[in-house]
Amino acid sequence: MRCGAWLDTLGVRSSFGRRLGALGIVVLGLGSGCKAEPSVEPAAAGEQPESASEGARPGEWVMAYGAQTIYVHADPALGGEVERLLLLFGDLLAESVPLTAKTRLPIGWTTLTFAADQDRLVVEEPDYDNDPEANTRPDISVSLATLARQRAVLEQVGVPGEAIDFDQHVLTVTGVLERDEVMLVRVESPGGRLTGWRLTPAEGLEEADEVESVPVHVIFNARPELLDAMLLPPGYLALYGGGRLTTIVNEANEIVWDWATDGDLPRDRASELGSLIGAGAFVPKPRPKPLLEPL
View 1: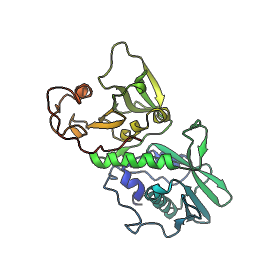
View 2: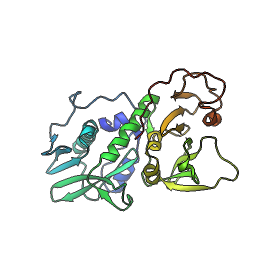
View 3: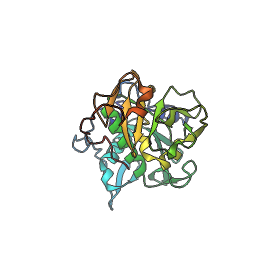
View 4: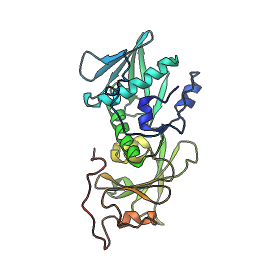
């Protein structure tokens, strides 16, 4: 089966196959060949499933899934993201994958589930405002909007993403979420519920710093912009300041995107970039438009 077009544009290596396999459902793993490409609206590409249509009210999409009917609710502005999701459902239908109230569908950073009422399936996301590890809600706008921003980062850098789960953890310096300038660094996950991400002040760790493990959804609620870079693979570093992503550094310590300048900062001292951005003797070039505006 081809990579689902919606996931393909995200370029995510997901635990999707393992989880569906655990439910006794067909394994649909995403290989390393699924890379982020510039996104194309599925409708413009003529790929929208023929069985899908907009519902009776704005923000509702309906798709026939065998004898069942899938209902998706999201902000109308996210229509392109919904269409990508419907393409994924089309792939699952082609593989005869059953969808039930027990199905969990991890995508990127979030996990979608289904509220089943006879032949009606309503797609739900974790309730990020109210204990997301225990509760879900039928509007999936937060999941889709965040995925769109993450895909923009992957497209800018040109690498496949590596999935996380909203209930996995990030190792953080205590109090770092209250700091304006922060740094995210990803290493290979040691396993368990850890994503491999480390969140520190931009200037790095101090000897007196205390470290704690914080769920991804807690970070999202405190600083949603930090999720923008969290599908980058191990070896990548992301710097934030002023409520936005400012710099991305790859595993070779090369700046692959920088908001302030495109050549004047040292390329071989990634650990010091946080303290150098906007400082020093260099004269910044005119700032390009930010990769992503603050949420």
